[in-house]
Image (cartoon, rainbow, N blue to C red):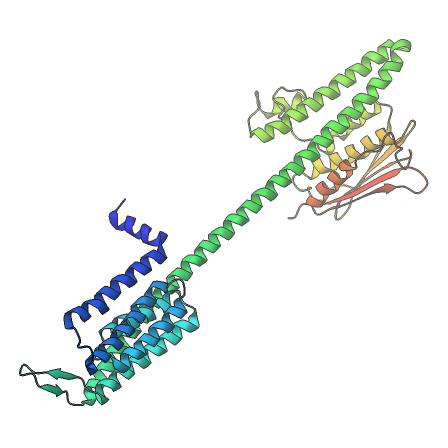
Length: 428
């Protein structure tokens, strides 16, 4: 690492130690060194003047050690030392160094009001220095040992006031630039943190949405297939003795349903692993429901007859009524939602409707979109043995809501259960 860069990092890690060290060095250079070089006679008027100058210098340089911890308090101590130096000190060396430095510090890290107050105080101090030079001109000693007082010149006042004012203004301007840069960096850092937090929240929401989507698909696939398999297995057990050929047909239905569910599960897991083109192209996967790779086209309205045929083999009587014709296409994924809605309604009928239940499915194309109505004449409420968690209907409601549609489910008047949903057309 560059030595200067290493020094900068060290100073930033230990700001208080750095300021205290700087205060000690300033005290040695601006206060003690001139005192040793010039000296002063104890008991003479110059001795009191020297003592006042030393105290004022110690106040101003010592306050620098607290400039970052207590910037306003350090500035107050510096102002007190500058006033004392103005009153008793014959020289302006310490004040000319420490006052602009304090103004810079207030402008850089102090509050805004303290920055403006420091600027005004520094300009007033420069004017006071000019007045002192005019009203109390300095004395100097000639080579012959004679003390001579400089003439009172208004020009000296103007020169001193202008020089002090320029020093204060320059220090304040540099400090204000540093302050604005620091605020801009802080704003960028805050914005970066907000963007990072927003991105994290978006990732969490996306993950939650994906988990919900997977849960809905898993429920639709597993619950429907297992219900069909259970119904077929129960029927095959009773038909095995009386009609063996019916048992064979039932077992074939169970195998076909299981393979179809397995293919759907593989497709869902394949989406989680990432897209992959099935062997032989998409047509082969569409033709073979039990393709090993499982990449099949998602079911839609055209697949409802196959769904009805499978459920009829389980003993459920299903009637289908189609009204109207589509005016526009459903949004992408809309037909899958319609298929899952009908599948969930019929699966619930098969599970909760009881023996002899009939299902009536109506697909009605309107000016707004597709209305789906699935009724049954079975038991209106599930008994304790068949009560489910309700996740299926909630999942269907979420699916329909994603497309701006509505879904209602509840008991019919008299007996039975009704599931109604509306899916709007895709926006043009």
